[in-house]
Image (cartoon, rainbow, N blue to C red):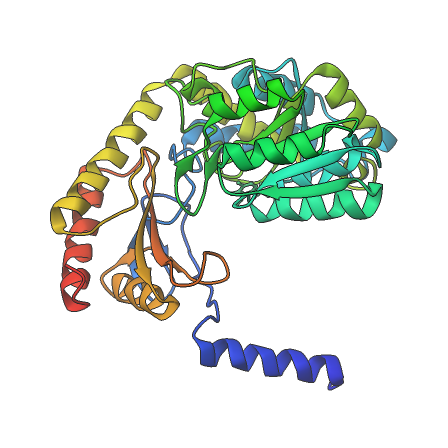
Length: 399
Ligand SMILES: Cc1ncc(COP(=O)(O)O)c(C=O)c1O
């Protein structure tokens, strides 16, 4: 095929390569774990996975997926309301709701799907959705979709800026519903949303607060129940979306959690529910086993926190200046995109896999390598990675 589309795409792809922003996929031949086998590289320490609790290869989690495959087969073979859903979905949804502290939840094949479904399904033309400037791409697209589908109003407030949010809420006082959306933990910074203040502003202006807790579920709070637990506010958030593809087994899937009415309404009307298959039962079962594991082993969350603190402190001792914070997301700002990509390449040469992020994923001039720590990393893994950081940092004149 050589038509104008094909020619344009080939031209742009070549430009990506020239600009140094072309993404090359690294192929792994082993499960996600602190050390993986990377094609062409051998054993590599991963510091760029969302496998925060190390559950993606936990024997109980894998066994639950295998058992569900044997019991339910590969999948639903259609949409849930048309040809039936599996009992494992109901059990999973009860567990998700229990974990995040809401009366109900509804699973989706991804959190991306959940974030696209929620605003466009729940809002109407008389409503407004107001979103944090640094929210995840799935929320941004969910807001765009809501505007296209429902003709609702949309607005963006400056990142975590309560004054700006309040001004937007005041301007929207004639709207029937005001929906405010924030990430619980912002994935490029590792920053935690100021939930108590956000809640206060939302309550004052009779707004509904939705939190995407994808990087907080299994991570924040003494028992890994997320941003709400971190602030001792479990049960207070109106709507939570989160992923099953990070701390909770890492396979795929997401959920929306809230009141029984919200979840029932999404079941009735959310287009990804009505026109697309449910989560495969293997994934539902491994996710459920991950939640049960987390509930039985809160010490994993403590270990995650200790590992993250250890790595952050040693990085500082080496002379790096990671963004301050208390989550296992530890970014080191380098400036230009090419610098972040070079550091990431050099680290991989040393056997440490850390991804570099540049514009447009992060603002211009704030390219970074982002380290993500897992409870499964041993001190040996972390020390070996830190030695590589030290060598690369010296070579690049960073420390
Ligand atoms: C904040 C946030 N929301 C949603 C998603 C999407 O999650 P999923 O992989 O389940 O679609 C991600 C994944 O990167 C995320 O970081």
